[in-house]
Amino acid sequence: MTDDADARDGLLQGPDGAWRCWWQGEKDDYRRYHDEEWGRPVADPRTLFEKLCLEGFQSGLSWLTILRKRENFRAGFAGFDIDRVADFGEDDVARLLADAGIVRHKAKILSVINNARRARAMRDAGVSLAALVWSYEPDPATRPPVCDRASLSALGRTPESTALSKRLLKDGWSFVGPTTVYAFMQSMGVVNDHLEGCCCRAPVEALRAAFVRPR
Image (cartoon, rainbow, N blue to C red; front, side, top):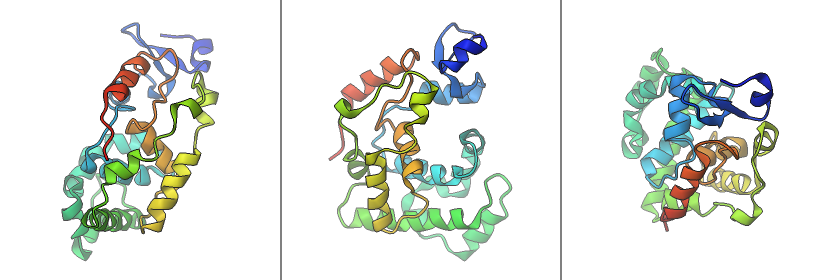
């Protein structure tokens, strides 16, 4: 484990000797998410839809809270199947509001249903959610280095996340502000924000280099 000086630099050394971004806090479930999911590029529309919805639920909460309830969210929202969620009605809203395993916030529940309908309309109009998301990938040459907590925190929103947020809002999506969208872009690998020196930065960058961008 590290001392406080190391932690201030934004990295923590785990019991396995590997150095990781500090935010996973050496919690087993959070470390697995950091190592196995965060920043790895995704093109699957269901996964992208799920993550956008869960980022919306995170607003005002910690991601760890949502992560630990993720399986309950998946059960409650039909695995985030876009067509099934788009068909949810008043009985489903009541069911979800009674579900103590998720965050029972009516506006956010209604937002997921609304966003499923928007995603379905987008797909039916011939627009790929994956292609849309990845079209806002920033030019690597414009990316600042992420070498400590301060540099990562400074990226709470970007021109690209703001532009994608505006596009989604224009199409009727909700709970997709630029900060929420940037967190989504980080987690889905549209950017690689593992800190310099993190054991996952190079493997994630290799995955991104081999990833075929959806069109």
